Length: 273
Image 1 (cartoon, one colour):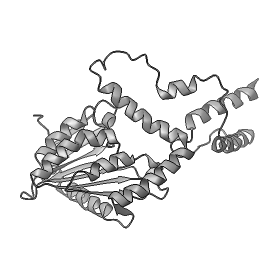
Image 2 (image 1 turned 90 degrees about the horizontal axis):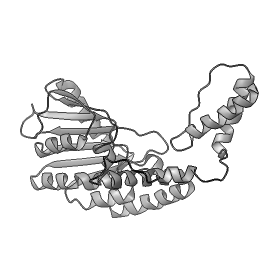
Image 3 (image 1 turned 90 degrees about the vertical axis):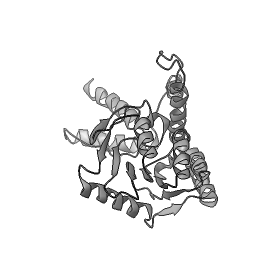
Image 4 (image 1 turned 180 degrees about the vertical axis):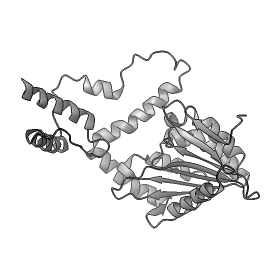
């Protein structure tokens, strides 16, 4: 078993630290911006064991950009005893990642882990993630504030209970969104692709298989700006023509900021020729 210090930076295999905390706690609160089926399946055995011990488990995820997978919610819904709620972001950014633990019979014991890891296999195992573990003894007031804020978020009017009916409605919206925004679908598929490769015993070897993203960009068809990118390019070109030396572009995840930078570079090179 891992020996945890009072404060610790975790940059690898968060799942090992979660396992220790789950096994020694009877209050388990999880708050992530999205959940993937791969991540749920990874922690499901831990949560089921905790339920058998009589632990109180609450999990809250968000619907922001419909990254949370309906299948992940379905799997969570099969774990009898885990209370799950879904935050309706309504277009507002929802990015928390927190794992809180406590003891109902010992008010002096507790800990939390807050950082960058959502509930996905790659984020919990071999992804590049930074998370900070802190024992309650280090700063009891901060720990209590985190617990209070969690419950405030969990029971907020924007959250809804996850059950068969709400999952069905969410799936309909999820599929509609992904049909209209194919890049979001590729993002979630890539998460599962990473899981398949990371679970291979030979995962340390170089993988020569192209990812879905690499296959897409290797297509010989000309890559052209999408509607949102066109609007941004017009605004950036106008900014350049007005002799401004700096500008900032704010775009939602998945709308193509990296490609936008490439398109902009092409425009600026044209000005210099």
